Image 1 (cartoon, rainbow, N blue to C red):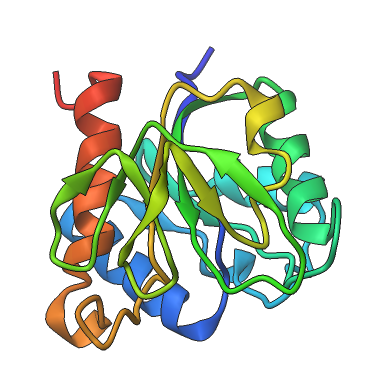
Image 2 (cartoon, rainbow, N blue to C red):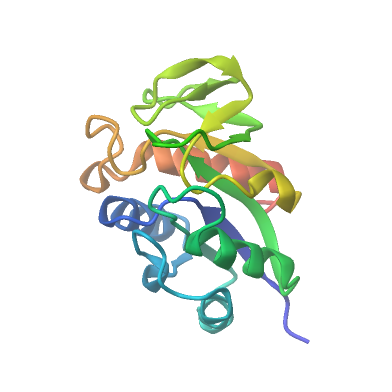
Length: 189
């Protein structure tokens, strides 16, 4: 039997996120499931799982997005399917902050601020640390606590943060979050 694919979940799926995730994937020899992009996600969990299985290589980045819908939206339903199908080795998740219309939040193990520094505080969509330790507000983070992920890294709005994470700069904040997940999961070993 083939080894399970190693998957990193990203809770954002707009165009900026796709470009930043693709840039990070390239630097790590990973594959980005670009078709998982959408605001909100349009693919079902089973469709995304099929794309992960077909991806070349063993490290795959996948985007999920709810576009600010309250409660469990399409992105979270698909995310839960991918994690709970137990066909992949989920290394962790990058929880993306947003200015939500509703108050959805998740616990995070650590955050990366807009300067690429680690902080125990949650960050806002601009990558600025907030007042609460270990908590991040976002729009596709509602179910992360239920998924028992090995690590959740919080980050500001991927590909943005006043252009500090822009894909043309190599998405350094996103790459830092990926690096933390890979390091803590033992993937590099």
